[in-house]
Amino acid sequence: MRPALVLLDRDGVINHDSPDYILSPEAWQPIPGSLEAIARLTEAGIAVAVCSNQSAIGRGKMTEQTLARIHEKLHRCVTEKGGAISAIHYCPHAPQAGCHCRKPLPGLIEEALKTANVPAAASLMIGDSQRDLEAARAAGVDAWLVRTGNGEATEKTLGTGADTPIYDDLAAAVEALLANRDD
Image (tube, rainbow, N blue to C red; front, side, top):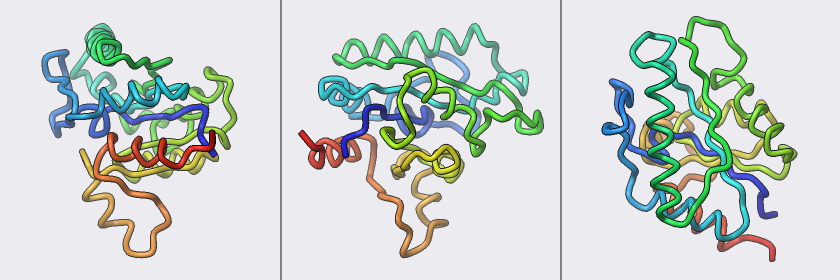
């Protein structure tokens, strides 16, 4: 079944990640093909939302205003390619805050589903880390892994026989999704 909503992790899926965080619009650089992949989802009538841990805020490394500027750049770049992101949901908390929204807990995904008014069964999460997969499953959403960002390391931890579909990058995942859709 074709999902009505695709949820994307941001860092490592849409844009290059950094161990030092993405702390400015200038540091936010898209992974080749990712913006076009979002445009393909939009053209296919599939809504796209982002669910991203942004602990740099809780750690005092970045303000919410700076994050808003990064997300303005993300929206602008996606729009320039013909795509749309319906919403960006993020957890601003540091890991020790004990919130429900920080992945691997399902809060961000549940919030995205509620905002989009789409059931979990009609959604798909695409991420690059174990916490993305765990958060999706905890919310009842199917999850796919991409090898960009932390994906290659995550793939190694899954081991052989894992039932998680794995793709080289977001473009390859979207290609597979659209090739198998029910029209």
